[in-house]
Amino acid sequence: MIDLVDEFEAYRARMNGKILSENNKVLKRIFNLDTNSFTEGALDVKTKELLGLVSSLVLRCDDCVKYHLESSYKEGLQRDQVVEALSIGTLVGGTIVIPHLRRAFEYWEALENKFGKTE
Image 1 (cartoon, rainbow, N blue to C red):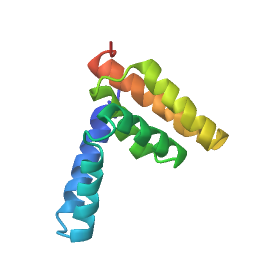
Image 2 (image 1 turned 30 degrees about the horizontal axis):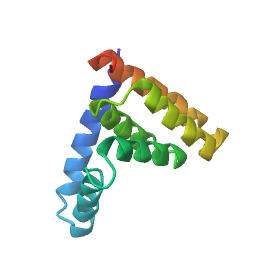
Image 3 (image 1 turned 135 degrees about the horizontal axis):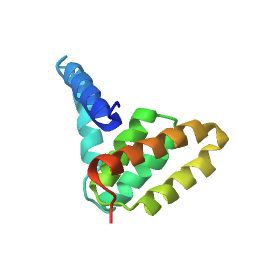
């Protein structure tokens, strides 16, 4: 059986490495801005991850949804908190995001299967 989490992490790491090896200042700055935007600030990291998750769902970016699901999981967010955020994203995005919602649930379950359920 394919491990969705390992497959995504390996692909993301491999391709980010290729992108960043181009030594392009604009791309490096965008990656840096993205990383720094999700650090502690006026909003805590968990809140920022949920905002990123909802935005990604509405924009229908499956890779982004996976990234924010994994970050949310690692930050200790509970399943019910993530599901509630996904429900807001579905409300805002409309029924067109339902296929992405399905893949989000599948990926969250893969995270739980790989690392255990969050408490």
